[in-house]
Image (cartoon, rainbow, N blue to C red; front, side):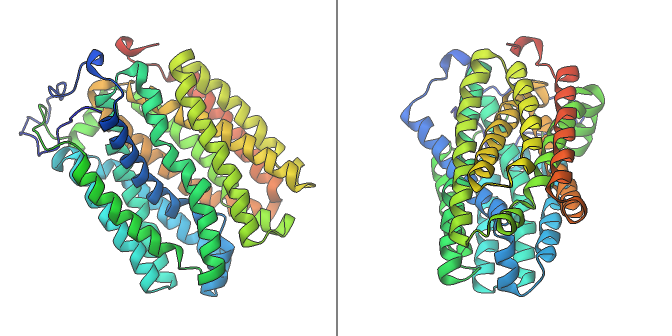
Length: 420
């Protein structure tokens, strides 16, 4: 990655569009080396810690509920509150530009660490709720800052690979984080995982601060709410990008929020068994991320993402048919998460090139839309589950996923200078 700027920018007229970052490297200057690989590794580790807290609440919602002595619907409510926080992503968009990407990413991880340690020290419903709300806010600050960082540093024909590598922090939350969480809950209680998450977050903050480039000045003005609105009016494609990221997250959340309950009630899985099943999903996601990174740069972003979106919708419909066998159910879930990762991860480099001069706005709006999708899905999913079971959740997920493909094919295209 390039030595990107991180100090507060010089003032600029609110109406002026930001110019290119003069310290960003030319595409010909960018190459994979040990230093950039280490920086990618640190960015990915930080995402791993954030995403583990974000994701383990789904398969272990019944375990958290039992530990707290509350109905599982209380945990679902906390998840919805956490997802709602993510809607503030456009409000948080100016922070990385105003205070520097490195500063904001490191500080947000420190706040995350404090929230996780609070749950470990004071295990209660209120502390868990507070921690989930905080991680929801931190994620929509950290992820757009990190992806805008890579969008500036990595040329478009290599960007899919670089962004896909950081997505291992998402799949790793299931591949490593979920089994460890299940093991710790079974032996030390429901709040035990939050201790190591807090320690990991603190380590990530220190590593980010030390490893990312020293601060230099931006060549453009600070992104403000007014500037964001100006870009939204000037470039309607940003709304289409947000809609595309909204719909798949509604589809996934509507099914995934009841996944742990479905697996426990259908197959009587123990905590350890549920953790191992989740590990398989993590492997599927990691494979999907690697496939996305390889395929979108080779065959083009739009065709790969559109095909994987259609296949994801098909697999959503197959989930209820797998209830007769644990092996079949796991195979269906593996296929689902493999295809879904390609549909979402493969779209991220496409989004970074829709409006290059407003990359931060595009990514912040997209992540706000993803949070909105999670919020809608986390409300719809349990309600449908209670009335129609997994068939209802799967049908809604498949329909919404197909709508996302329509949005992609109809409206999303790269800027001419970046099109592949």
